[in-house]
Amino acid sequence: MQVSRLEKLLEFIKAEPEDPFLKYALATEYLRLNETDKALAYYEDLINKHPNYIGTYYHLGKLYEALDRKQEAINTYETGMKVTREQRDNHAFSELQAVYNEAVGEDEDY
Image 1: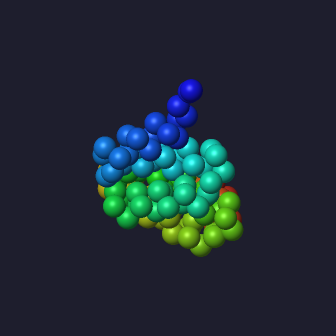
Image 2: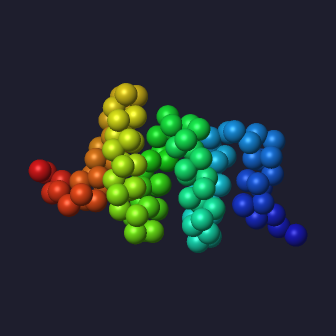
């Protein structure tokens, strides 16, 4: 019997329950499996317990948008832009700024 990626990740997280990479991987896997509630729980946990895990902000914001929770998406992008500026991660900042501008209806070159 082949062990699924989800089963492997769930085993890993048992051993290291606070590992941000494993939480992110689980959120992404649940999203891929269209289990949005579980994905959302992991992404929100990451934002609350590991606010410097930059990749979360983009994906959580996009998930909020998909769930028609636009203001929460905008807030998430804003927080992510603040964190990426503090960490001097210009690439992540520009990605967040682009989706933020799109979410608030501003032209990217505005």
